[in-house]
Length: 439
Image (cartoon, rainbow, N blue to C red):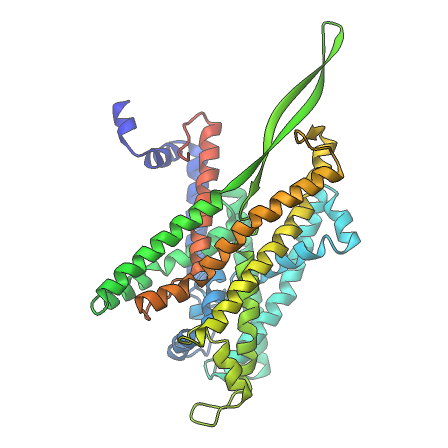
């Protein structure tokens, strides 16, 4: 017993999980499917110039964001180069369309069967989105002389291969969700980011030889960012709720009340505002790159737009890009939170279940109260996301370390997935009467 208490609780929980056959099977299935995904991520498309592709990733920052959602496969331009990004896009589109289109709204209210239909529509939507995105990537790479052949048949074959790779990644993610531990789509992205850590550490050691203090402060900023993400990911406001119920006892009908709470998350939107904001702030620079004059020629208006929307631009020009990014993240955080909150329809659910907030009348007054609370706590979540979004810029300017790029979105994904997976593992252990390890 003393040896058990001496071990760290998390380590002991992992050992306990491996002693249970069903949990051990779930963990091994998750690891095995991640290994399969990493193999697929290294199956390249034909006719790709790997050296030119590596150089392009250093010059076009938006490719680094897309590489996150491909789990590192886009950097190799493999058959899984788009990863699960089209599926995430389709899910976001469906999430925004459900409250707008009455037919979809009616389907979503059909319970589990309706959710299955929505998921089926989402999967069908992934195919054209993956095709358009795959073709757009190939056209862009052909213009940069990274993909050698621009003929019709090879292009069609590559696009179909990329669509198949995306659907295979989505299938692997759903297998992990059903038979493994954690959210499968998030685990796929998490695995790709973690797989790139050795390369980042290697670049850090090389930078440390010349910029030791800069690297030291860079690591401090990264650790502080992780702590901030953990705090705001777990932060929530508890709204007290009471439920009244009737109990037949001793030939009489008695009314009893029970109390609980609704946890309203400070960061309801997660990382979605960063995805929306980055997509929009990168768009003008990408379009301008098609019309800009080459290096050495007289700059035109497109060159000016490229410089304004260049995330690698030095001060004071870089303030424009990161300032717009900061404001867009705040705006999208409020927009997405309100969309999610309206879909949950908490006032109606409370009223149907016989619940009420003490001191607040059910119905419209409860809705007004909850809207007021969620709008106030969303300010904290929105400012948190906006600060995390510009941390790469702040870290670069403070430490002057250029060879490393602190990915705020990558940190959000890694920390969020790790916390979610730990909670699911703890829930499985608690169900089997083991002590939890998250306090």
